[in-house]
Image 1 (cartoon, rainbow, N blue to C red):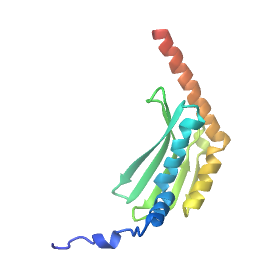
Image 2: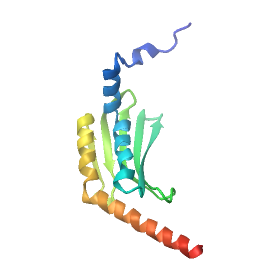
Image 3: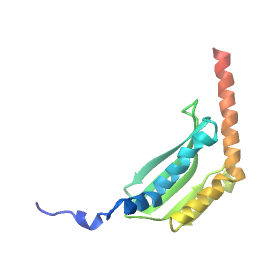
Image 4: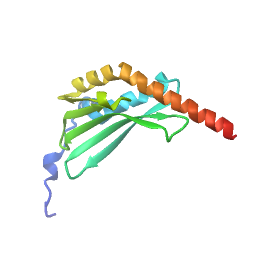
Length: 152
């Protein structure tokens, strides 16, 4: 073996079940996924939450996009939140962008750790802006349902 790469210096230590759970619990993608899992139950199965990951090789960033998706019309999606991990080797800090219907009110912040990220997400999910997004998507679903019933 030639030992060309410094792979050993990048290994994360998972010593036991507890250290594994902590790594998973604190990771930005997993935090978003926890919220995504709640969308269906809290919306009476009308919506799903999905998290998509994009690795930007040229900038060493990872972007996690949180989408609200219509359960009935899979092509009806809204990117609600974007979390950017600025350094592929470190989970934090992350930049968070909260998208709203009125693009003038987009909110951006930086979170230094998982506790800050959870707090910001919790506040945003409970906000009027998020309620407006769900209301807007609900109206679009009703339009699509009406159009489908007319063409049947």
